Length: 292
Length: 204
Figure 1 (cartoon, rainbow over the protein chains, first blue to last red):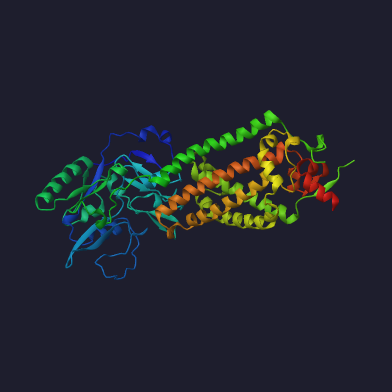
Figure 2 (tube, rainbow over the protein chains, first blue to last red; figure 1 turned 135 degrees about the vertical axis):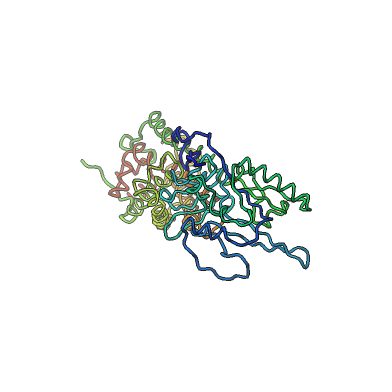
């Protein structure tokens, strides 16, 4: 079913300034669901992402891992991280994580962005960067609790996974979902994905993964890419923050301070004017001066 | 008869003052644009959002250099003496224009000296946090967010200082502003505002 891409939030834009017509909230809300236990590490999703989004190929080098790239970049929006974690003395857990934008319900990047329109959140859950409006300050990078957006030194703008918004708009699933051969990445209405995740977690727990869990962190209002992880008690081993927050302390403090600051500046100007009215000017020519 | 004039600020001092002053206003306007979405339009004065992002730190570097030169030029006159400490205790009378109850000031009164130290401190804060934010690729998110907070606190303090500075230097005390234009003040102005300094000048 095609999506009309109704808008939910726009960076540096009060919600009152978003046209009401685009604030309709009746549309579908989507989510990806990544079942890490089903991933076979083929990296087909990485290729599909590059291909569909026409992202430049980057020279890679072997650094002793099955992982393709060392890190995300402005041209690599999806990276399967192959984390090798030692278990005891002679065993290793190979924990794979699909590293890409989680499309938070409360997006820290959008809250941190000072450029109107550079980040747009749609009612369907997608958080998209609009490079035309980006000023390159990279506040979104430090505002993201998941370390996802990447700065492009050539274009001086920031880029990340856009959930293949052009496909979603046309009623298709994102490219990584389409290409995944084991259904480790699934796509659908968020409520359906939550129900599916619940079943998956149950199955895993029955099979001995007692800490199996759904990753849909509340600190960012939930995400529109959720994970089912076999070891829910070892999120850090998957490179997943245990308690991500949309606007953590320095930023939430800054928000309050900016509000207070605007009043202080106003009172400063008014105070000077008030002082002038109360006490007038002090002209040196009128007096001989006290110290003369 | 035209009043007798005393030289107060050299050409170099005036140039440095205006370099710092003009760059600070540009920094304040672009910084306000980054801090308040409703003021983002201020970026148009320097050519739009991306231009503001590029220019703000570059202008900031010039501001930092100017502030450093200013510090070196003036620091020797900025240490508080005994009368300055009394002046601070009488600041209420200073504010109420009761000049006969205020201890006489030297070349700079204690308020100006405190202003100098405060602006120097803020300058260090601006440069350190500004450098982090200029090149965010090299630093972690927690550090950068803290730098944003401190940079804003500094800017708020600087903006309040600017309001006080401009108000006192122009409308509150007529005859002051010209010291930063042609560098001179009238003898009456000097005797009224800086009696100990005018005494030195008259003797010399």
